[in-house]
Image (tube, rainbow, N blue to C red):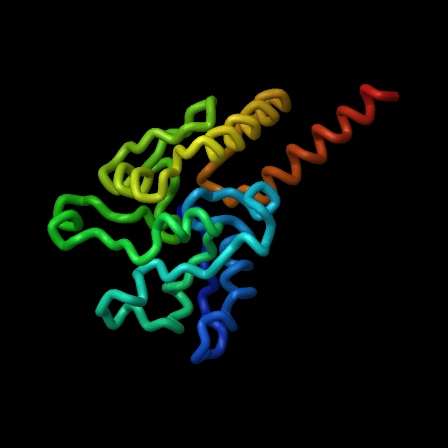
Length: 183
């Protein structure tokens, strides 16, 4: 099953794609479509943007600027690195492409290390990791800290699921344990 589950029926058609923001944000459970971090860990809602998965600057009938299903919720840094990049036809033929977490599982393309790094398992994973710098220092550090908290709780982060509920559980549990220890 894919990491993100988009709504079956899109909202009413809008000429200005920014009007879809709240719906796209809901579909992505307030997480970045690429690095998978929740807003709480990635600079808050103001640090997130709508990304055209297939760039609107590329000629294709699939890339209408207001096509709801082409809009992905992305943190500013991932959106900046992705920009209007799209693999050439030659790279696509070889299997190099962006992983689409609306259609694919994380574990199909990546292995998550305890230190917070992600190891690509496929050519699509390699392309995505390299283009979006998914092992940049900040991401590895945050994911490593999440892994430590989860390990302390006797669990682990499941990157095949949106991160929000997992973070809330970990933080509540960690805070309640800290409060109990202080008593």
